[in-house]
Length: 116
Image (cartoon, rainbow, N blue to C red):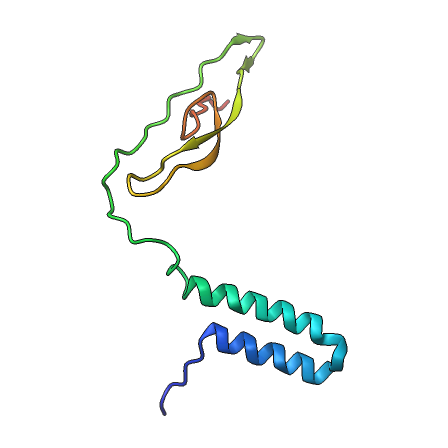
């Protein structure tokens, strides 16, 4: 038996049309929303098609530093953590993107502790 494939765009159009027909005019808003989603899918293409092809392993792997405690005592270790929003390039072929980072570094510093 031959496999029948339906793209997401066609599926969403048919689904929206079916809702509109089954539910009368009250479903027109739903149909319009489904068609809007379908239009967005059509613009971005299949899953992952909206992303540019990237060459792998071209940037060095960032190694996060270790958080340094600001105080210790009585079995408690205190850390001071600053959080800030920055623009950072995550791959040489991509534009900078917005990140929230801790203590000025990405990836975030490591927290190390002892059990027991």
